[in-house]
Length: 111
Image (cartoon, rainbow, N blue to C red; front, side, top):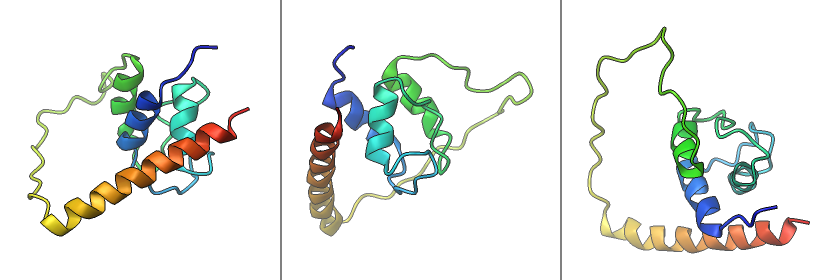
């Protein structure tokens, strides 16, 4: 079995909504990300945001059609995201460390 990089798992995890709802069949988004990286789950398994499957497919190197022949979007509006307040930047650093801690614990769960 090929060794799965923590970076790939982290990139998959970052593409998810991080709601830990369990609708994908896994206990949390971190476990789902690891399963996708190992090829045990579909990149489109997230029920909260099925569109994240397209981003995850790019991360794992699988090409998929963006739409079927029945649905062809004419335009996609550009997202307008305001700049992050300084108070949230510090919180984001803390969350990033929490994500790293979660990934380490997930690796320890693997047989």
